[in-house]
Amino acid sequence: MRSNITLRQLRAFVEVVRSAGFTAAARKLHLTQSATSLLVRELETQVGLQLIDRTTRQVALTEAGQEFLE
Image (cartoon, rainbow, N blue to C red; front, side, top):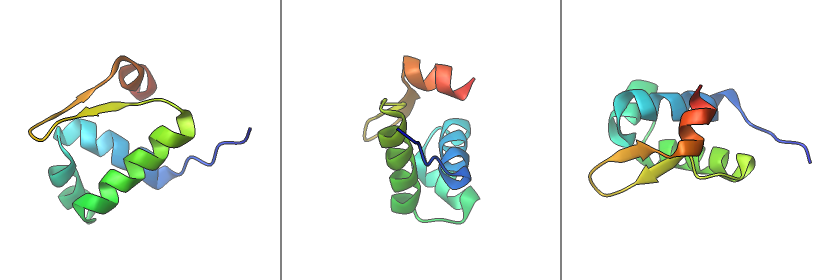
């Protein structure tokens, strides 16, 4: 199965981690929060793993997300 991971998805994922949130990451990427969230969700779908735990107040890397980031 071929994966179509894009540079935009990877940049969004890394920025969400660096910024510790989707809203701050979206600002830095010049995207909307929903577009940033969609990019990360698409990346997670393509790799078949949940990379980020989301709550209403914070985001945290899952173990798989930590390994993927490295």
